[in-house]
Image (cartoon, rainbow, N blue to C red; front, side, top):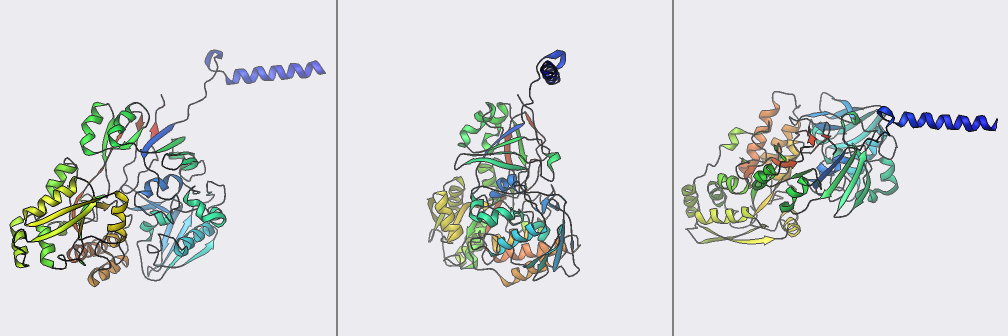
Length: 507
């Protein structure tokens, strides 16, 4: 009996050995995991409820998913929710969740979890999503897979809004146990789950098989790094340290010579000269108009983006469906008219002096030069990036500022409110916002996205915003990326880097 057991074990081991062997009995080699290495940044916070900068959406979307997401046309499409339906008045929207959803901590993602997340985003003391969700009056669980958002006014923008940071659903169990801990370690239901994070260095992820769209995720291991100085990025990709990174426009030729793939990906990034209507001399509309007519956008495009950008005088790119051609025809470059407006305001050439604030860069020097050409003496006060955000974005302490912009918002209403609203983070003139603009925005909210009246209503709001507020938009740039030829099929989606369908050929 003893010898039979030994023989059985020996035969079983031999069978397993043959099963593990390759053709001809050669030992099988385990498949190498598809690893993707992205040089970019780490988010300000890993919790979408408290994250504070626009670029965080790229990084949070690795660990989280929203009820909706944007397609390549900027339209909302199903994600965690497989469908949604408004009532006739636009005051309630009901989302139907996909069955069997789980967070990366294996807790269920059901209607109660969605309710808990949205309630936390609305009420948590340090939430950065409160204003975005101000239309929400209540969140009601209808059944385990159905959640209804009750609004305090008609607002058809919510499928777009929930594709952004406020709609990235966090684990209810993790938030209840330690909400502050989510700022350091994400617990979501995105394509990847975090395995390691080191501040100011890197974050490592593995594919989450529970992700609702896991069949379209072909990356097994995702490595996110804080980017090196841009001058080192191209050699690092070429040598395999990284697979993918954004580059500057003046690096395109170098990247191509290095054998990398270079693409200009669509984005809603836009840059502007921000003017403070609450500070002299820009409380005089004639001075504001002078700056507008004295702006040569093509010079910025040529010298900063090497021709990759497109001129815009609104916070939307010409390629976006929301873009207003009528608005973009306002204020053509006319320095002579600018000088006449300044003279009418009592400022002959050389009499008016202003201070430009912003992070150091060519854009400040171009602005200084163009102001000089119309008779305004400008002094540059270059600030470190952090201080620039604090003084300009938070405290609104500047006459005129530049080298700041927007990465765009999933909802055009949110984009306009960010730039022109009473508490808009990039409205240097806040709390100023014209009543006509606010009424126009309310009309956009009230209009269904598929209505023939939607785009005209949106264009009226854009025009009222741009005409009433002194912010002077310059250009919109694509995201210029360089990556290894081993990488293929990267989606082109505005606002957010996404990775479904992306493949990495292993060495």
